[in-house]
Length: 188
Image (cartoon, one colour):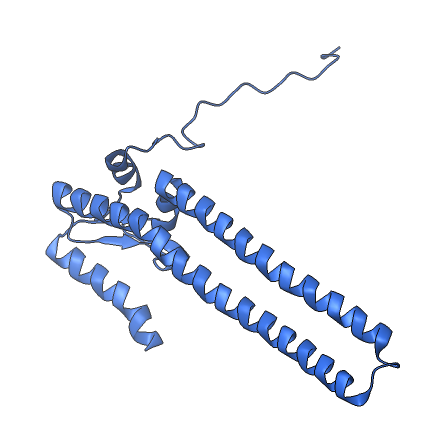
């Protein structure tokens, strides 16, 4: 399977080169992170995580209080009370672990749902750019998936997609360089 995944981009490039099909490429994650929908989703996700963390913390504080009470009174407790308190502590601990696990699952599900709109909008922009400029396909170059792209048939469509999304297209490399500050004291 790994060989197939390694071979597939090469095969696509060979087919594209022989058919003179031009294709685009983009860092999907880079553009996604520039979108306002992404920033809003991250903000909402952070808020949700904070709420789950606060609730988990309350449970842990309750466990700690009861554990301290148990330690302080264990030598004076009759066997039945000791067993009841131990069972209660075990239940609180199990509930805390279960809550953390469930909250992680719920946060992961919420992340998918919150990011869905940003992904839809970006995918729609990719489709529009692909159709408008006649690309056979647009590759996602994240994760070093395409270590080489022939500039004759491959076109970086990042700025086209940014424009389609209404995002700023100037990158740090394109910004005019500011003059270097002069050293104090000058040259003698």
